[in-house]
Length: 200
Image 1: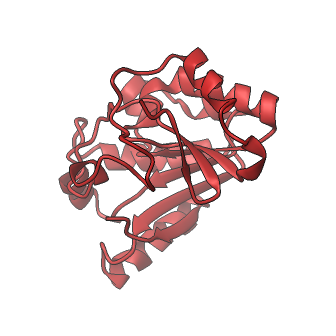
Image 2 (image 1 turned 60 degrees about the vertical axis):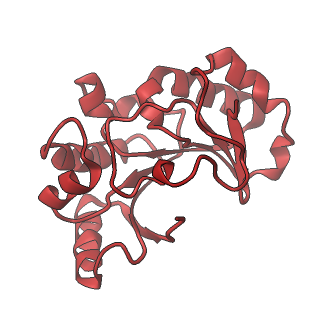
């Protein structure tokens, strides 16, 4: 069972396969691993202690960041994520990033942004598109069209508690005009916009 895996200079944490979205472009549809990680489909969700023990198998000094991102939405296990992040910071003094769909407020029915303070340094959120209706069509999330505004609210709120917030879209997936609108959204929220390469 692959709990930790390497991508470039970072070590990734595969906490869960649960996700409130069923994105049309999800990598899980076409592959079962990333960067020769071995299958990221979990037999069961690893305990916090199991994840902590896995770090001892890696040479932690060679990584830039520990990234919570696997074959699922990491904030589905937010409290466990934060417990592991606290361990990473205490044990290895490393930068912690969470790659998320930004829908944790809807998952828990509350403002989750303050929970990230002190545990997470970077939050990277999949924006995907500047359009609310298109976002719902792309993500097919279980919360409906309101999820787009909830995601933007989370992005704006969480920047008060972490040092960097990034909203991302995938290169070639949207038009240049849509990218311009995404940049305008990010400027309005006071967060960073990043166009990431397609990894199909």
